[in-house]
Image 1 (cartoon, helix red, strand yellow):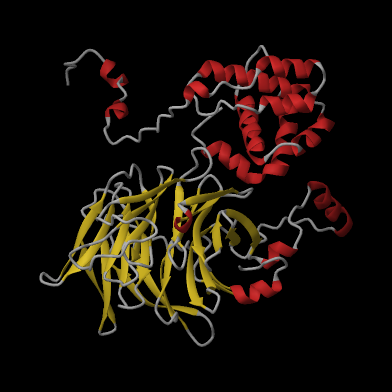
Image 2 (cartoon, rainbow over the protein chains, first blue to last red; image 1 turned 180 degrees about the vertical axis):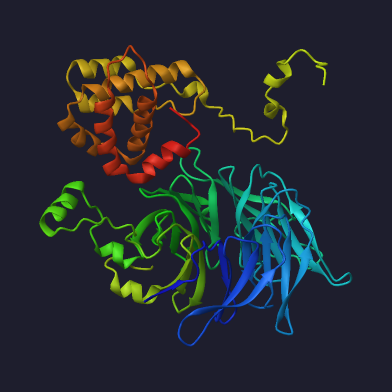
Length: 371
Length: 154
């Protein structure tokens, strides 16, 4: 049902799976990227260590089509790694940034990638055949603070960005040097590079930093999570109608659409939560952590002393009820089934990587229905 | 080394305000419309012991994010007055009549109440703590996080 792996005692900053999901590239909050492989006994072993960044690695994305890994770091660089003779060789990409890079994603056709940075710039990088070199173009206006996350639309041209100026935005990242003119999308008709197609607030009122943005599988909807403990979704097919849900929980920092109507978000509550988007409304369905869903969470001081008196039990438990012992910082899709994504993986600051099987969780947790 | 500059005033200059890359807040054009709760109405309701109605009235027309500190102070004092007339046993029922955004708004006022120490008001912290407990039961950790993250203050 859920596959728990304690990879390390160090936090896992970011992770990404390869095409057949046998290998995972992750970073343990340091300057290296490690590729882990699962052996017969189920233990994860570090197969390769990719050294190149001179500062913390902040984002990793493994291209499932081209088998190249792109990484970005706080050293203001991005590297594209290629497997040659069983060794991963880096190619530096000049991003022309004067601040750290924060997140990176390959586009759906993997001919270009987007890097968000603290320099208030998104760098769109593409490969130029003649010079054998990665070039980049910048999207600057009207971003006014750090770009915290980026996500591509399935049409390979539209890009969403969540920034810490309390806004989620949708841009066009059409690179005319390497692509044919794109068709008009529900998000906008004018798809010139760097064009702002839509801008949304993080939550009610001013909101908080937008930690993560995600496009739905067919690209019509965009979801984002804000530090104001809210999750929101916009539907471009219904005139950019926005649905915001202010949650009663701690903020989420990552989100992913699993079907066209369901979003999984996770963050400081240490468990993934399922939300349903329908009829212009967002609602919380259930948490995916079955241990917490079924168990009574609160322990009052009175009951603790009662236990101590009656049973002589004097210890206080230091572990958290959820499977993840600390905040979750990234959700990735592992496999797709007939309905949509049916397995997701979460990595956290407790050094664990957990794979959640949504199909079996749907059967076992009361009230969990993925629409 | 000898002191060539005797004045030290340059050290008090806030250089950050001259940085062009500074994040500028969105200036809200609606400021004239934020008037705050109707004072006479609320006072009448308190006088006639209609505590729950007074609570409902005081959360109307919230002055959030305005730069008009006088309006905000007046609204704040009014809210504190309404919160202090409730008996501890009545708070839970009153909170149940509020909508989610009204719970968030009251939570903001409760935290402002905690932070302001004036010698003129009586010690209202105990009643504020009761309100905090009941508002938290409904609003959860999210309502507290929103007090902390929202740049528009009460």
